[in-house]
Image 1 (cartoon, rainbow, N blue to C red):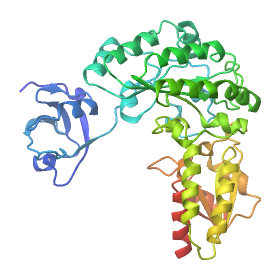
Image 2 (cartoon, rainbow, N blue to C red; image 1 turned 30 degrees about the horizontal axis):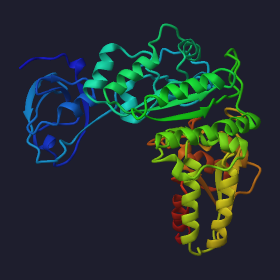
Image 3 (cartoon, rainbow, N blue to C red; image 1 turned 180 degrees about the horizontal axis):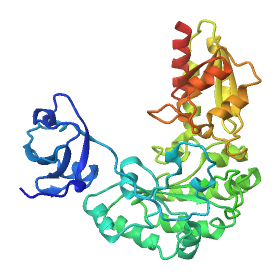
Length: 439
């Protein structure tokens, strides 16, 4: 048996009960070194090499003892092994608009980590610039068919892109995308729009260049730059305000529709924030396709409208209930409208509480970036309903903490109200209200 260095192995976090791995004697804490003699660098290699009907696993236990295990899964049966995501590679860019550089002190430590890892792009849908992509990594992407990838383009003009990323000598993004397209790798792309830099003719070039790579480049989202009040000693950037958003939509909404009609698919998509800032009506939900840019804040509000209408139509009267629902400033209008309609159908007393963002500044208005202290400050001098409902997007999944490390229990102690977390959707809110009313 070929011995491979333990630092090349990956830690097994869990083994499913009754699985082939458990039947084979594999335990959590073992490290997987190789499958059928192929070195396993990460969970991607595991998924790629473990498809064999009778895989041979080389493992090393906590004492450093190597062993071979033959597994015999039934057709379609999972081997039953779970691993952590790869430790992310650090970002070497110095982007003009990097949100991490604009964070205040005292937040959760992982928030200050800048990652730039094509593996996490494939596994988790995080955006990468490919500025540090090596030829060997490009070869791995194409040979293992790591698709789709999520790529931050920002501009296809080389010098402008270097300016935006704050780094010179980076690979040409169009060459990289063309190589990925030739290998039939699907890509979703984004442009963070910085007024006066990558808009205007630069944006026209970027859109045209990426559209030329369709259908390999499946979608392109244009999102406004996010600026906080913590930009001391950082480059001066112009925010997207109401006037800019309106002018931008007047110009680009017709172009978006014409391009998408020509391609036959909703390729170009504009972030919800443009429509909220400009106070413009949203496109129909059908114009967003299968919502490939959902995590980029594209199509969330039209989807909310659709589900809210469905919830209101089927809502039934509830026992007496008073609840306050916390929301960001940008979503206050449509959330309040939904709560009013839902209150009329259910008889519940529902109030929206739009909370200004004191942590990042007034220009940051989304619900998911509110901190625990923001909520306390926004509600301290008010009398919220007997229940205080918070959408789960405010909390770190699996840990239940706000950006500033406070927990719902901390809010309960200060505000004197029961805090209830719901999934943030109209349906989730209605189900939560039903549970509260039955208690």
